[in-house]
Length: 335
Figure 1 (cartoon, rainbow, N blue to C red):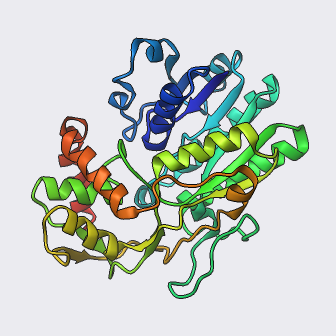
Figure 2: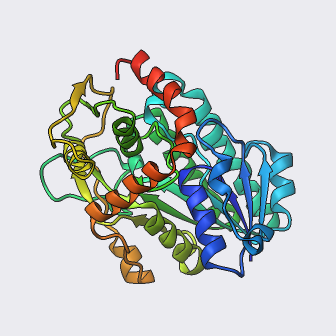
């Protein structure tokens, strides 16, 4: 099976590539990535000769029809991870989010249509907006869309394109909306790796607002196992929500991180909240579990976070070159 993985040098995409090469020797992978700031070629190293022989890396933009056509013409499937995804950046420069997340998805869907490829679209639970901090409500595939940022609005638009191409043109596509991921190879501008690497360089963690916002955490390896199951066995046209029942407030995450790294749990500082900061995300993944038999491997957030801390501690060469610029950007914004 020949799979095009868009955004395969980014966080989730690179972990998916590693999953395919390590766990599925029958799969050949072509990574299509424009290698913007959030991508890292070093995330696609360390493979065996046999694994490297099954990996092709193409430097190109998903919104470029010629490059997409060249990469997709001999493929069997597209797994579409590529996206501008950082909410803070979408508030200061939303245009690129529309260009990449909407136009790029359109170009890929046209290639899938032309060559009759299986297409899986990786999306986010943020398309549903947010939930009250109190109560047990969760997002389901039937939850109405209510995006609250340029990022989530662009992903909502791309989801609707996928559904339209299924219905109008018969594209063999599925969608997954996942909760917040953590694990190795995540860009250090994101919450958990930023907190970990701040500790490693002697900076106290900083929390938006009061730290009460809740996210439903899932280890990236569990997310990618779910994507594989959907690609292989999901019902065409359906949407699957991916989550591991990992609800934690930002404050609780930092308390645990401090404890695991040898600091007092409340050793952090608050900074001004982000505009439009969603309150709470929670996923009902029962459709995925019941139909496809998927269950998360990382059921204990403490253990998964410890493993993630260990990875960033042992792989400073991967993130240190980016650290100064990331913190300078946050400092400029007062965060």
